[in-house]
Length: 435
Image (tube, rainbow, N blue to C red; front, side, top):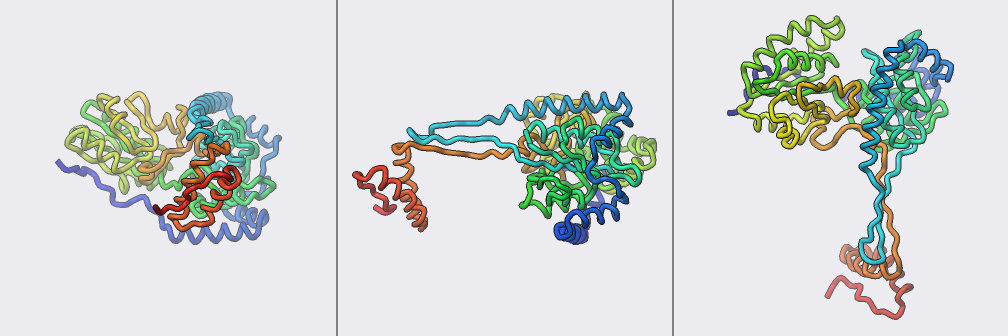
């Protein structure tokens, strides 16, 4: 049985890339040339903000005072979960020392990048959790300097809860600047900041394009598109929970795809019937986003069996993948392409988005085919080293000289020759690649 689409997307999650690219490149060029002044001009234009760019200790404390104690406790809970999971991830990366051949020792060393720039969205929604996810992992990785950057609101500044979260998670500086100008300021080292070695965090299409354009001169976590989510559900899944979870992810934005893949037509039809009422029950701004995303980007697919469901999911390579089906261990073993996996009804993407401990900065638009999400590993350079005794150097030098000459790289060969001549002047070596 071929996949049957009970609902097919009419649009794909693509922005007008060429127009966005032109706008972003102009802004980046202006700010690189004009420095702090140009960045502040764009901040005044787009952020409608003319306060301090770098928050003072007093401003951070004042923002913290505005955050309710219950919210502070929730932020600390989420931070602690993310921190402990990140520490466990970091423990999987070990320095290595290995004697490849007698006398030749090679090694691996994990070194954190020096400066991280963490972008925290603050436009439509205040992404408190993004501050926790990005700053905490950079801190655990061991970055020497961490800048948290978030769009300020006119007359208000950065949302107090974002300021509090960034501060307790370990940000060295908090910058009130959004969009391309914020990304540029961190990259170019404006306002006295160190130049960022890596830029991380989600953002709108302009932020994503700025990161794409700057990639190479600075590292990035990934090039992110609109968030997406897929649910695999069998006949025993709770249709109300499935529908609620789909709507919860559709509210991210008008172009956020959500997909349901099932082997039960009755479940699919039940879920589809429930979604309009669930969307209508949302607050207005959330309702508009969810309605557009469901109308234009959502898909409902009926498959013959669970193997076809798994294959469909791997083809989509979703950012978020939920399994509400029997035999969760089978799905964990079988599925291969996803940003983060949520097994069973008892967990949900929203947990991962906010407080469970796994990171919510994840690959979108099918990128889970080749990469995972943000982790301490993204901030760490895995570098190698080697040392050798003279005896250990001998067989490597001989092989290097022969291979280099076969490739036509005589200079490489001679760097091996001189060592053999110095260390073993009495020996004659066959350094020609030809018999």
